Length: 98
Ligand SMILES: [Zn+2]
Image 1 (cartoon, protein in one colour):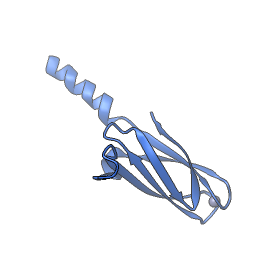
Image 2 (cartoon, rainbow, N blue to C red):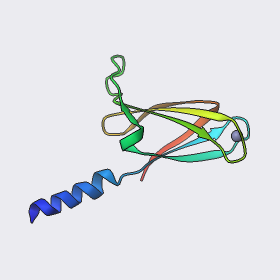
Image 3 (spheres, helix red, strand yellow):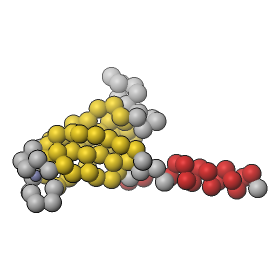
Image 4 (tube, helix red, strand yellow):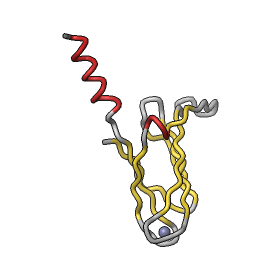
């Protein structure tokens, strides 16, 4: 019984967590919010100059009415706290967890 409850708790607590990043296109100014999946978008890294840097996320983003390709790079800690971000072709706005 307790095992069942723990299983449910970890399912809803961990794997259902969603991550979002918002960037602004440098050509048209559109703000684009994308969803980031832990299972497919998180790459484990080892950064000797910044040991708290544990995950890198790379996404290519295109707005609705524009052909400007933005390349987002996010750096996160082991606990998925935000460290820093870089956007080629755009501007980084926020990283959110829901
Ligand atoms: Zn644009």
